[in-house]
Length: 220
Image 1: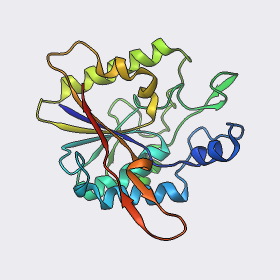
Image 2 (image 1 turned 30 degrees about the vertical axis):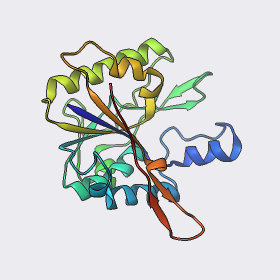
Image 3 (image 1 turned 60 degrees about the vertical axis):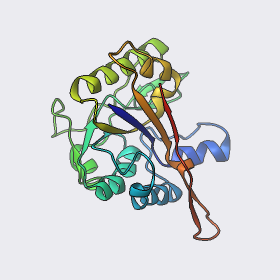
Image 4 (image 1 turned 135 degrees about the horizontal axis):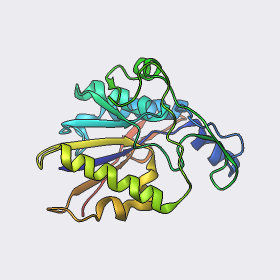
């Protein structure tokens, strides 16, 4: 199995953090910014020209709004369904407040809403499709994130063959635990490619010039 980890495009929270240097006023499940929508569009438009993307055989996405919005153009371009999963949410899940302070769990979107955003999205079979998913709230603990990363990898290894090329459109919860995600005992090392949507597809806001940059790729 070859994994391609695709970071969601720029969200409104990303804009907030860049402009203010803080997280006051953050949204628990933010949509993409205007730049983010353009990044996602370009990701789909250039998918068959970007290494590792055009050959994907499977797509998975977090159930967050920004991940689904990033997934939609790519799924259309590759003519692939997107398997939604509640295991790829951000660190701590969806919540009001600050990660290091008091937090209030909050639910995510409903199946109907996310499928309007990304028609190719397949709702997880174990979740009730009549109500919103619970947001995946969890304890702020590195061991909790590492355990979730191990579960994700184990499930993928169980489900896919060595020839499958699997794209994960996700919140970067894996970042603090990347060694756990890729360094687990396995029959063979897993090739992993990292694609940061905002870095791979640079959008010049002053004019409509666009540049596609190479993605980072490594085998571990």
